[in-house]
Length: 566
Image 1 (cartoon, rainbow, N blue to C red):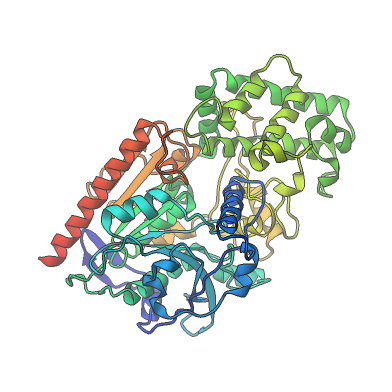
Image 2 (cartoon, rainbow, N blue to C red):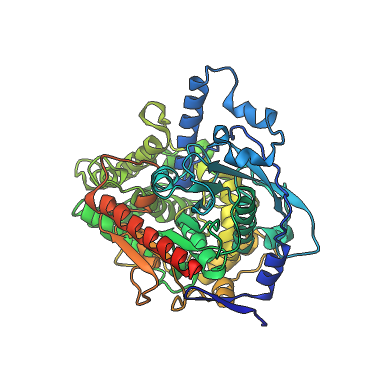
């Protein structure tokens, strides 16, 4: 494939034909349509939705603070009016809902259709052209208030005198390129390729509108640093890797590059989740394994009705999907699959470590000798309900429908072994996990779960049933982009919580002197990019990690300035 090679820093720019088309499409004219308002919060059950619940609290707080004159939920519909482009530098619009007229299909130059992409910004700390732009990459969920990553949007913004930009990922929240898109349309539009291109478009638009020069030798050049955790961490790293002449530095926390390169053993993730549970509460691993096996045997031996099985394990029987008709299906979905998925969530939120965390409390349930196996399962799902809804609003039984994505042939077990989530968000995320973001996962004999090998046949058949006609392409991205080889990459900072199951698929070390890695012994899933900062409960390694990261980023900014002035 022909490419155009040029150099910047230590990174050679090697672009595909599609990328060359994209860069030619980034026009200098102003094509923004900005709006302010509040967004509608989304509810659900997976870890993505726990974050959305925080949004509800924040929106209520804003409503009360503003005197309750207007519902924050209705403002989005009432106040989507066009702003003058200087809204970007107006501090009154900081942390307010804004919209950008984004390209619908970045891969088709002949298509001039657009859609409204939601984003937030902070200009409060910006010291003007010549200073950095910090871009917080959105991922597989609704972009909500308060803005993501206060260490970035406040701490680093102050430190660097930076402008902050936070775009929402297409097909999530209010950023809907199409409504009721067909599978054929999703194949073209709902890809990481399009998400990366969206980010490039918006970044270049913002650079121009706030007075930054695109000439790297100019004193008004504004270096761009992207930030992301988990899937957005993957996108953050890929932005620097694929567009090094536009993105100057990337911060990638808990970024599963090896996972999406298909370089991780299927059992690695849940083996790590089991290992961390046993560190959190010694003996947990054996207790969970024994309980699940005993519960499976008891259900198989003594129960023939799914309704009766649901009642003894804490589920709301009326919420079971129609396809779950047999005890075998009940066990497969609620014991073999869903218990590990819930533990995966508890693992991701295991920070700061301690007895009040959901992970340690779950272990204590399984290690309690008083309760029988089925009672332990019931108490485990009761804990899940408390974590998701709060103690005062905990449901009397576990609503299984809130684990079910929308769309045809949906099942609790999904293409994402850690849970796809409920409703449309769960459906679009599972689509991504069926087409490009393939997660190979299994439960080994060494894990604390009922063993189940990874089956590519099941994965392919499940995805074909869910999204007819959608290609199953586990190796497409890595073959096209080559991110399994970072030897020529530069200025990407990888951070990892070593108690995070996803650390098995992240970059934990490097021989490349132009990259940096910070491993956090007490960290869970991107604990360094949390919603709480400053946090007096932060462990010493997180505090030190923030300091170390700041030094690394400042050093790279200094290098860029020196290179551009020479």
